[in-house]
Image 1 (cartoon, rainbow, N blue to C red):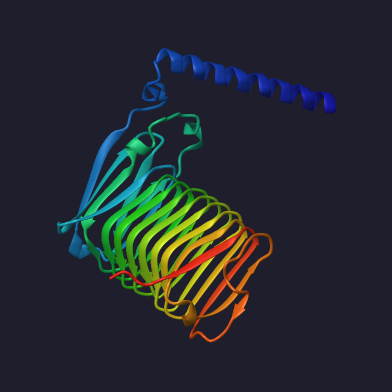
Image 2 (cartoon, rainbow, N blue to C red; image 1 turned 45 degrees about the vertical axis):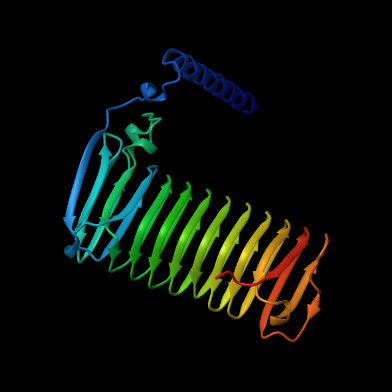
Length: 315
């Protein structure tokens, strides 16, 4: 039995090696133009358009394709997408919810190869304001959001791919969950709570305001600039450093890093805070305990240093 398994593994290894050699030869033949190596039917550009008045919620469920949503001065929602035998979409408009989903591929087409996934991304041009909810579930592919006001909340789930959001507002909550990929947020305002959780990847935030803000990263760096919360800021990193600049909380700041340093600045005077800090292995410029402040600051590192400065808020 063991000999049979060894033979099967040997054959598999040889087939894999031959496959890689074939791909390399094709790469040389096409002189590095990966688009010429695509196997399967060509993509056909398609478009869909609907009046803004007919839509309150947007529900997007994709797989292995990039997504870009852009808020514009328009009264229509316009979707541009690409289809072939292996990549097809279904668009439905039901009870004020516009749903776009990628239809699962036929098993007969799984061996088609396309090296231009991002070039065939889905682009949605729409009014700046969505009066309902925005829900995005993307298994593999980038997500870019730009210039949107979503009244009833934003939820984004990404299995593998990066996300960038610029000039985004919501009068409800925002949640972002990413298993693998970087997340970058610029100029984001959330009326309720903001929650960003990453399994693997870096997090960059510049100018975020919310009622409460929570970030959790299993593996990757955290860089936060000008992050404000009316209530509580909570930043947790299992494996990676946390860099903070001008963060502000109305009640409490909690920072935890199991493996990595915590550095940066907090808006306010040191005496504004009751401080609890602990650096199990590394330097610490904060007192381990200092009482008296109306706000609370907790900083803890298992392996890494702590260096937190206090600064006045810029006008």
